[in-house]
Image 1 (cartoon, rainbow, N blue to C red):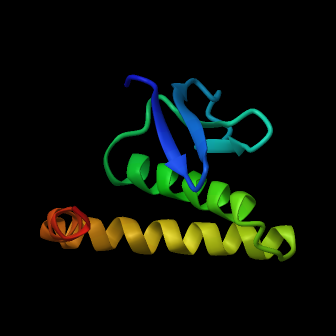
Image 2 (image 1 turned 135 degrees about the vertical axis):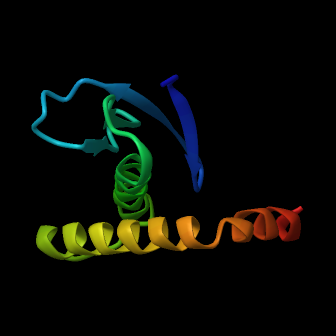
Length: 101
C-alpha cells in the first residue's frame, strides 16, 4: 500500500505501511508526525487499525487528558465502532462528503 497523508487540525501526518514484526498492528508518533500500520493488514482490521491510530493523533493534537489506559480504551472502542458504522452504512460517507461541499 502506498504511503499517504492525513490532516488532523493544523497538522499533516504521514501514514506508512511497514512491517511491524507481528508485535503491533500500528503506532502513532506526534513528535515524528507519523502513523505506522502493519503492511500485511487487510479489510476491516486494516480500517480499524488506521482509525485507532487516528484517534491517538486526535487525542494528542487536541490535548485531551486522561491516563494512558483510558486513552487506549477510548481509541480502541471508537475505532471499532466507527469501522462497523462505515462498513454497515457505506452510503453515509458519500452523504457526508456531499453535505460538506
